[in-house]
Length: 205
Image 1 (cartoon, rainbow, N blue to C red):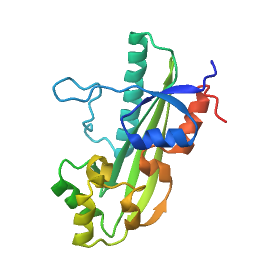
Image 2: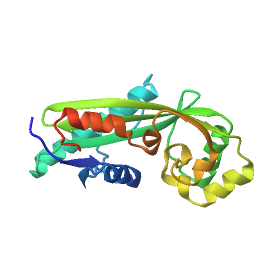
Image 3: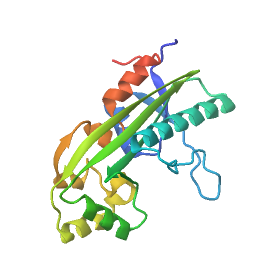
């Protein structure tokens, strides 16, 4: 397997980009179609009886596979393709990104004073090889007042985040305990990511 020190990242998340830069991993963006007027490259609707753990890994693998197809179709350099998907899970329910300020307030009110899970699936496609991993982190919120929730939502920070919060942002003040991967809650668990990249021949450190 050829050794490389560059990858493609299939993600529009600035947090994932920042985490890769933190690790000194060189990447190029490869974005998929997500617009309502055009058929999306990946259907993100959960399947019947699919657990959150299965869901995030499936989406990560599908995005990496589609990314690899795009590379071949466009005759781009054949580099590893990295993708990830993150979901917040409370009471067995997958909680995605809020579609409005009201929904963000409702989500944060549910998370207040409770523990929830953050599941992140990571996948790397390289040639005919596909490897994937799952990160699960327990996050506990302290009780939040209604004013705290509304003030936080008014900043706009929750609006493009699974679970309506950013652990690396102002919501850090809400989190009383975390058990697992901090970077996984941000959207890209670095331990698992580096391990997968090494498996496909990525030259790291």
